[in-house]
Length: 128
Length: 356
Image 1: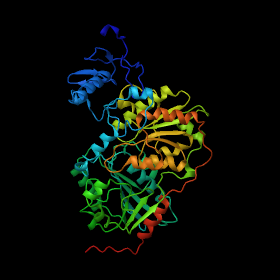
Image 2: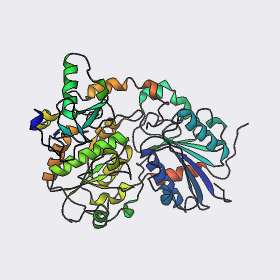
Image 3: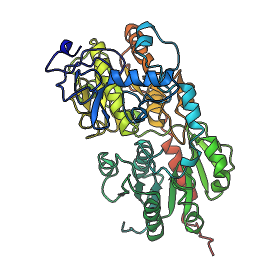
Image 4: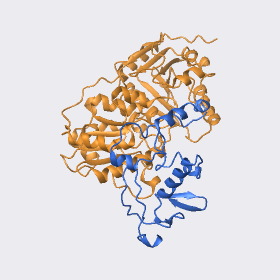
């Protein structure tokens, strides 16, 4: 499989909304599938890096088995995985549905999170 | 801040993350400074902020000479922030304290200091999480304020005896908005005919990065439009790494260029929503999770909030609908003027402090 990767460019196609080619220069190699990946598509996994697709697969497997295999990737601050409280609401057309990560936050998750915020009132000085 | 005889002195407490509190405070301050009829002896304003964007927003030039911005680092602990706030409130002299949003202060630090302050106290009261209001008994805290100003949106205590609802507060008057051509130049759009779509990079740094990715992909998808990513200086491309495909422009306040903009893709923050509504600009609003206010609620009042996966479809629909360009200077009433009248009316010279 590794031989299929194109050298000299990032081979990850995960996008924020759409799957598309990424022409950035690679900075790492994914330890999951060995594809060259750029800084933007690299997700630290201990001392190595995984591509966005491999992280999504692991999150998906973890969800199916009821265990989070890589909780470190559930990073609220990662633009590829943190999609905001409102992500997933409403009707999705075909290709959006396909690219939508079902394990991102949903509205229901948002409500669940909202009920946990009581302790944060008046303690988070970056809140607004 | 050295004081000049006869001048009114306002201290505006605008603590809170993002740029919203500071933008609203600046809008009020700027209008008050220019309000010679209401405040004939002049005014000196000091704004207190811990916004992470305070250093890159040209607040001082908005206010001009003789006014002050006190910046508390956004990464300070609650205790250190509270200490700095107490220091400013107890060592300065001012006639009016205007507190934006948090009657007890962002970290509860105003609760004990407010009763001892010999000045008029004004609260800017907008939407707040009911759980917070209940858990911290904000109804009691409201009693400390002589005037509660509700800037154009429903708020939990808008029926309080000292509350007055105004039109939304904006940082520019209609006549101050740049013409479409001038605004296009400022947005670095060469074409006079392409619709301009602006993706707003605001909120947290993570949200700004996310909106940059969104702008990049919309830029690739919608070649018939000029996609611009608006973000505070030094917060966008430098954080993400690779250069952005969508042109990044740092413009603040954004309202100044809105007449060139056909569609805003942004969040449901107070300023974004009210600027779009006042000027009749299409907004594809994504409700962000906030600790204190409810963006989803705000967006629902102005249209349906969008999920990220809906943005492209909604934008395509708008762009294909033969979206109209600017048809003239928008007409809106800026609520800051009523607010200034009201604050001025409670801070006349005959005010006597009754603290024993």
